[in-house]
Image (cartoon, rainbow, N blue to C red; front, top):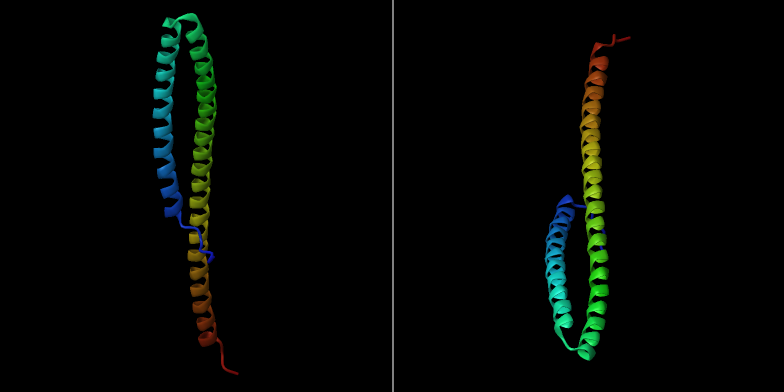
Length: 124
């Protein structure tokens, strides 16, 4: 596998897709909570042997929702970490760009100084 230098557009693309993924995940959680509430209401209206079974299933689904909530929180934390990484990469990119500018200017000034000192020096 060939290693290429990091491209900020790749990270931007990842962040964009992660944002859309998190939005869809939140929509899924909202629908899931509403569905679970309806299912629990149905269990309450059912006869006793059936309602106990439905409430147990609702409890399992509730635990699944809790796990999905924790996963959504982890995805949000991941997105925050990636945004911080993008900010750091941008900062490093600016520093590298500034360094290159300063090195080119320094080289140019040194070249002018050397050529000036050669032409200005007295011939012995």
